[in-house]
Image 1 (cartoon, helix red, strand yellow):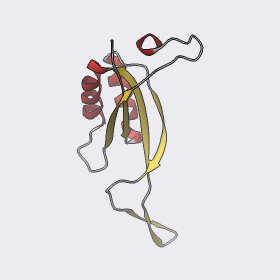
Image 2 (image 1 turned 30 degrees about the vertical axis):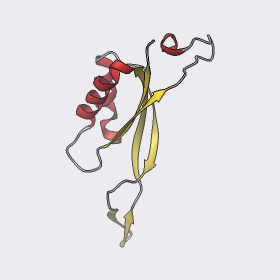
Image 3 (image 1 turned 90 degrees about the vertical axis):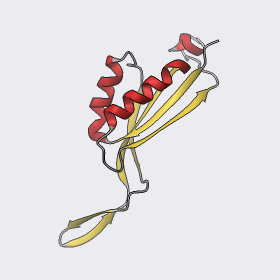
Image 4 (image 1 turned 180 degrees about the vertical axis):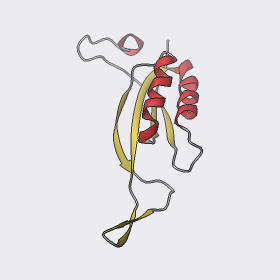
Length: 115
């Protein structure tokens, strides 16, 4: 029985194209991504608007979600790490969880067949 993993990655918006291309070229074209906002350990960025200084504590990121076979999770993580990395603080995070069940709505296919 094949186990599945859910890989969720939070990456910089300007790295999205590189990450998507790298995953697609490696055979992982199925993913969902959306705009996300949040903050991590980074202190706020100081900006000036109309002569007033202010701090931005919330940053824009992209959240990617992929469902992959258990044995492919490590490869997907490596691809995301290499393609999303800038070497700077705030490059993002990757979270991997077990998928208990996957059901395709239209066809009611379950597990790997649904991918």
